[in-house]
Length: 130
Image 1 (cartoon, helix red, strand yellow):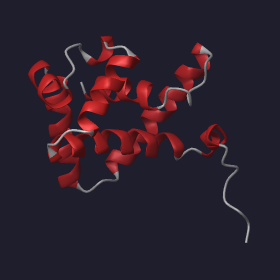
Image 2 (image 1 turned 60 degrees about the vertical axis):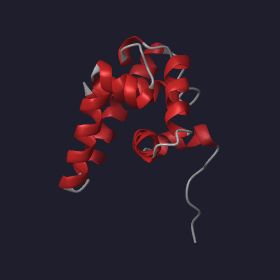
Image 3 (image 1 turned 135 degrees about the vertical axis):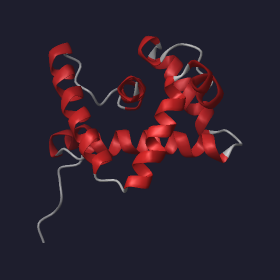
Image 4 (image 1 turned 60 degrees about the horizontal axis):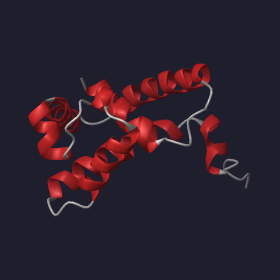
């Protein structure tokens, strides 16, 4: 269920950064999921537990609605629907919703842009030699 949440978030947050070609896009998403798994595994156990709780809540229909304001299940939600839900979380007056947004977005971006092959999408050629 956590993969469904993160998959929808990645499709939205990384929209425009992922390859257009369907096969290349799938390869990029599969590699991103591997890096995401590795990133989560490197988190302290208590942080992993909190993330697991967040994903469990977001994967349930009542939790998805309460935290993200998203009525459609993550795998069936459009990029526009997920974008609107993320923006609602981002601009919420509730710190918990803002923290959930930041966790989803930052883990998504960190795992994607940890691969030097993705840097060119940002126009970043890599670290300078000193």
